[in-house]
Figure (cartoon, each protein chain N blue to C red):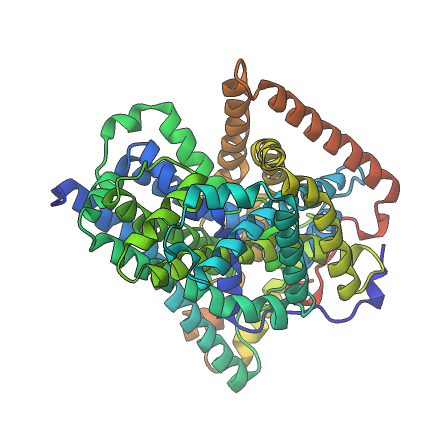
Length: 107
Length: 488
């Protein structure tokens, strides 16, 4: 029995959206893990937030200075900034200018 | 409660691959192999798949991100995570609710793993291809033999205990790292064989030809919502528990959220390929549910060329799917008991597996009791557990706080602000809707009494758990406390 065009399209879309995406995520996840481990071996440390997420963390700390979780947020922010200053090669896509412009937050 | 200062360093996953396989293995279970194919068949084939995939991305992926995140953030099992985030001792009882629901679910799931073990064992003995094999009689003589079913339930729990005794890295991870790839390989192999059978493509056509009228039916969307929410294991406490063993540099959203939800459903799709072509090639009723697996498919394997091999691949992979889920469900209890009592890991494994074995005896003895337990805990217990975990992240910790402080930390993908309303409003609304729908559709049916019993049981569970925790809850672990080193 030949499949109709719409059945073919639905089947291929399902394969693409499920096993296709799962396979791509698996490969990406394993590769990024390898890169993290490699950087950790070489540098002993890596940056823990991408630029956009670190910016959001800073904004959150500034708008919620008295939040009970603010001390932990400040600590995590500063830890990432210090790591970026210490390491030669960031894990996330940070430019030298972006790192230069970063400032720690008073804890 | 055990003093945290006396704890040894918390174990972590040995590899990324091991964590991902453990997560998928825990979520892929009997529901994926037998439920997804016939749910797809009952609800318009391709139309259902489209609705399901859409809801999977919108609901299940963000939900699993939240659950895995709270596990890594707190570095604790279910009760410990609730204790760490909540100030109210009474509210911490919700963690106990999650634990009890898990133990109850495992008590009737363990006999099902025993069924799968029995069929896997007989497939290896080539029983299904013996001359004169009668699948219906074989199934009935098995299920009506309490000693045999209880024996297999015992072997199942002993095997799970045997794996869990070795811990996360040397136990669970070591097993799932080969079990899940083999499961996928076996389903692909059976699927390829199925579509190359004469008439097999009719099954593919049935599964993937969309009947668009089904998209206008509420029942299709409810089925898709239920499948997206509960077949992915969201809110069972497994993602929280497995996430608690992640290291500080590990990603949550890509692996714990996206891969777990989509990988789990991918196995369901492979099950569609592995069953429907065979079902149609041999003229079997495609909506036969569990009978499809244990009776109908056992009947067709002898008729396939090389049937003994295909039977081995299918039934052993089905056993792997159920067993790896059993490991995940049981580990929720083991992690929590080892953290919250003075028992060692070994003592916790023996205690939890022993309790599950004991509570599972009625379900092993009577499949109708098993069905009643499944109805009550599957319909009301698991949604309650999901609500508790999602509420912890969305309503107590807060989605924005969770997202900026922890979810995007060391993440493989950036999670934007869209995540906040999904976790805070959409997922709880969906769970409440499914709960309400289950109640309404049970009224006036044979399940009405069970439904009332199930709701009463869940209310009692919440009352007892919150009362117990208000008495024995550990005040010192209240919120907001900095997380332990592994989660930092």
